[in-house]
Image 1 (cartoon, rainbow, N blue to C red):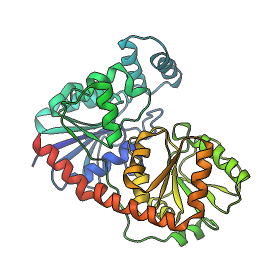
Image 2: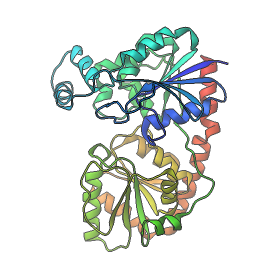
Image 3: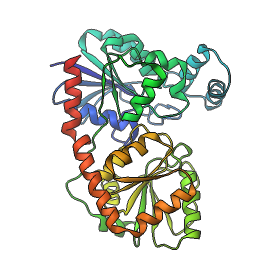
Image 4: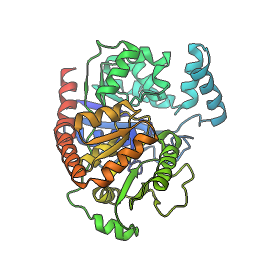
Length: 388
């Protein structure tokens, strides 16, 4: 049986979103076909990379996990200064290397361990191109490296540092058509083998949406957001738009927010923040919602969007995110907006037309099964690894 290393910046059952959750699901799902071992950090916080997990080795859901302490926690002031230079000023490639080091997680010990055990592994799968372990891991192992970039259309993807990186790995596993197009365009890596795969999700067999509403005292119909509540996820704009919408349009819908807040949430009975919830509560909330809203401008896939479609719920997305807009068009299961007036019209349409919500939800369910069921995802991983 081939042995596969999974390398990602954070790993644990406490992390239920983003590339880290993506990596854990893939590790667990392909372990039926390959001998899988994970290499990650002891960090839980992605901003500071502070030491959190005490065990250097542990087993999580049957997967062996190796943890390495970050040798240099992020200095937000220093990182902010170098980021200002590389994003907004003329600079040298050395400035971009410093940016990478300051962004972290700085774990040279992880790379050294992969080198020491090189002969054991057929391939390494590196998640998230923009972090230290992926950059130096792909450069070190090249044709034994498979990269899952999870790239977003932001300033980072245009850095010179990564143009060469995208040309090095044995293969690239993309999350979407749009992500592949961006990376091809900025790096010219058309000759690098790869596939558009994405990730599935663990969808429960049963749901209790009424139980969710009773538990959290939510009355009437609601629109749902799930994820981090911060600037990068577009939350301040969503809150401004929804508050204005409430003032201009009569309606009974409540906006329910699930996730840890890094921005201030207005005190309004029509805006309910529930904080971080369990997967069970999350899926019950999705099942009971009128539709999901994704205001982020920076997404490489959006797993919660796929989960909403799996449960037959339509999605409203920020149309400035090419990936989300493209997914909505291909699925015919979502609408999008680019400014407040479009936001207002889209919310009015979906709020007032239950039949349209049902039809779009059914489209989403079919789209999920055809493209993101676990059999489809894992077959693509197996096929790519066997071809390599």
